[in-house]
Length: 135
Image (cartoon, rainbow, N blue to C red):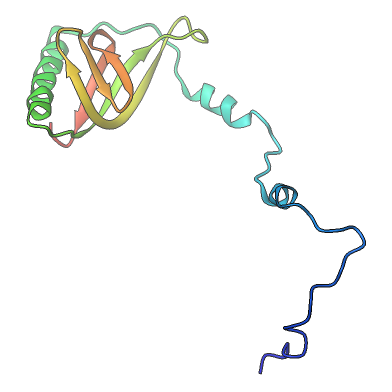
């Protein structure tokens, strides 16, 4: 016995204000951000604005080897998870920032000189480093 047997099958009481719509009920439970734009401001501070670094010949050679290894895996229809650190310029930062992208290697085009991770294309000349379990 739960103690509610006497009221379990009774109809819902009629409210003077009427029922609340589903959309209005959803607003009650929606997330609330007291500091609107705070997360975006924090993300902007995480980026380090700096000039583009020149790679040494050894670093360029290492990148070429890694690109060839990756190309070999992609030809075999394998798509390893890799992390690429690359230089990126945008309207906000004319100086440019270094970003890190981790994802599945989708394509490597040696003629057009870019690597594609998921939906993002990164030019070879912008790449600073490539890492992953396969290296």
